Length: 48
Image 1 (cartoon, rainbow, N blue to C red):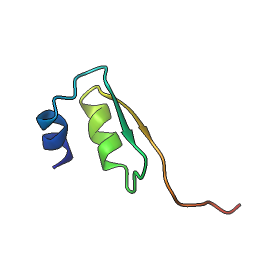
Image 2 (cartoon, one colour; image 1 turned 120 degrees about the vertical axis):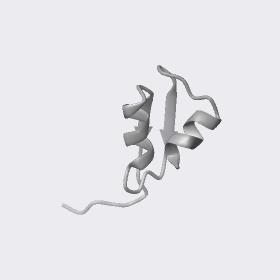
Image 3 (tube, rainbow, N blue to C red; image 1 turned 60 degrees about the vertical axis):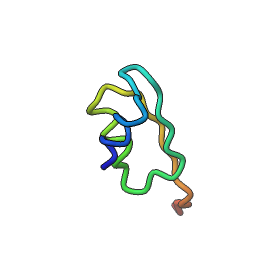
Image 4 (spheres, rainbow, N blue to C red; image 1 turned 180 degrees about the vertical axis):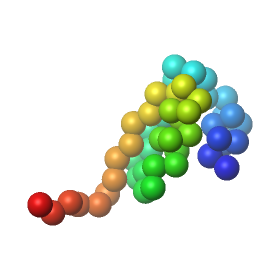
């Protein structure tokens, strides 16, 4: 589904995709597979 959306909005190799609430990272993974730069974040706090 994410790959179809990236193709639909015509994201190209070398572009940058921002996923501020990346969850399981599917958007980041598909972007990298397609050669698209990606940055992700999470709203979850990590306790050490």
